[in-house]
Length: 472
Ligand code: SF4
Image (cartoon, rainbow, N blue to C red; front, top):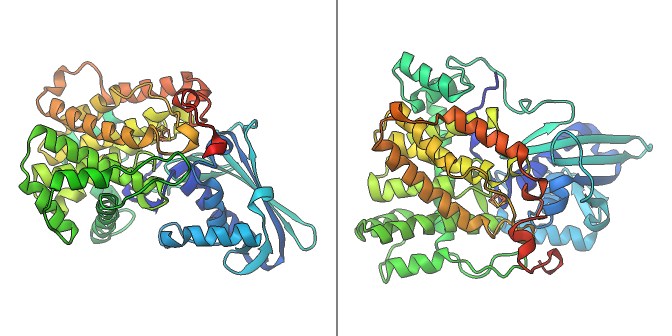
């Protein structure tokens, strides 16, 4: 049984896409590991991108991620303010500092191949590295970016990136989770914490989860104060900062905490609250579209839903506390891992239901536990949130993670809150649809969905809005 940690579900990285940016970046780092000591003998590197990576890779920054990965930079710590200058240096100089060690000739235009008409059988997000050494030996490796920043090498299965360690509470389905919670008397977050102890101490887990929240929180705050247009050529104007200004008027603040308190002082009117939830989600995904630092939750395209709902919780419902944040993220993570194990969190496999739908289900469960809901009500909230995302396609205009992606995060967040409220007012015993049934339905729908709606920009809004890739 696959063992997925909360730190696998929430990864600190760089936007705009977990499968098309973070995954290829990590694949490049894995390829550097394969090259190992032979790095100073490398003469040439070529990269072939297949399927969805080829079709939307430019808009999703796949080439940028590959250059940064081959340069040996870590997506968790690399200073995002240096992305433009680093990429420009490689593009104009046609040289790359392989693994940060040896300068080799590298022209991204001719050495990164976007093979839009070709697919590899295992997964639509495939990439192959070919490197030639000084004695003409070729090293070839193929990787698959399977969603949420998870990467597997050809020959391995989807579980290879997560450590297969035995957990005290092994969970494959919502039914398992419900049963183990009942037997142990623990809430979902309690089960997660006990399992996490197999990886590291409770203190280390708490520290790591709170560090994730800090990145989410900083991303919201930054996005609420950043102006201008998003990169990529679609001329999409940032809206979070305008909304933030409109809602706060002339209130003064100098930090995240003062800002949060200022928002609280504005009350809890319906439109005011709704506007803020949208503002939080817009802020994160505008930052994501700008190659900023974000948390994959469970993907980058859907990175705004969970932070927006958590920010809603600590602004409008409860006061901010480390315990509340920890509970929310642990519970959300367990729901996400059930979707990953039994369906998919990759839009190239399942459309946007696998990204925004899953993030909404995760947020709904996290919120419900934090608001005092029972285990069954948490599962019910997750089920409701996904049920109303079923069939949602992925059709990003110009291959950019901007339209419809950014607004879609506001919708995912609002649906999560509605799902949580519905579940809190319902008797789960009377529910007609279980979480496991909706996970299966999502997976069935994913398999039936036409490929043009799976992150290829071959259908939907991507072809009905008159903007071509070349203009972006
Ligand atoms: S449409 Fe949805 S799944 Fe597709 S890139 Fe945008 S957010 Fe991701």
